[in-house]
Length: 281
Image 1 (cartoon, one colour):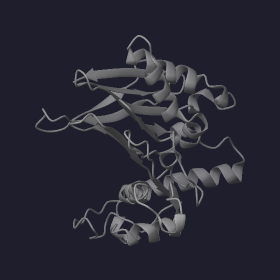
Image 2 (cartoon, rainbow, N blue to C red):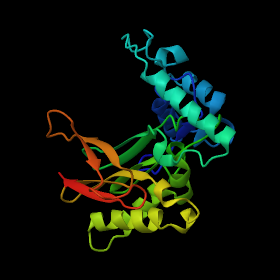
Image 3 (spheres, one colour):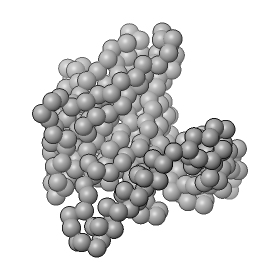
């Protein structure tokens, strides 16, 4: 999402494209061009239509074997190990156990989530946000997660940008990216930590939209930035109700990226508690 124009583009249920985020960028940039026959450029494309659109706009295609460990694929490195297979088998057994035993199954906290979100601000103070996700293991065919839905996975507007991760269905129900953006834009005391905490508390953990969801399954993470064009001051914020969240950042003054793992305080329970912090650059 482009914070200056508020244009937004996404793809979903996409296979055969090396970098799906590039396909999403193609959808976004098409909105700035005049379309033939008075047509309106799309915001979201899925499945084969998204793949054909991406290839026709110069995105690099691939086959599934290129993306599997143990194959000399597009990355040019042979890196065989058994972890991917073991992880797949583990979750397949859990799913089969749930179907056969009619048990409570496995909660969100047991699932593997792999969303990658990115937010940025350029030299002119323009902000943007993007997200890419493979979704949870053993997801239903055709599922569209929060990363591809406007206001759920990303938001960028004026001086701030947001990217979310976590339990996609619940981030979608709460439109959590837009919720965080609203709180940051509406804060009256310029305390962005308080604003993001309010978004987590009122817009997610205690949201009436999730009242029928087990508290321990209310898992979310957010990466945000707030940029003041007048002072050129940028604040990087993050928060999560998961046990931990990986973060990384870099500015023009850094020689290399900085990365860290944020963790809930000792004694805090994922889904019931959350943590919000910030760095000023």
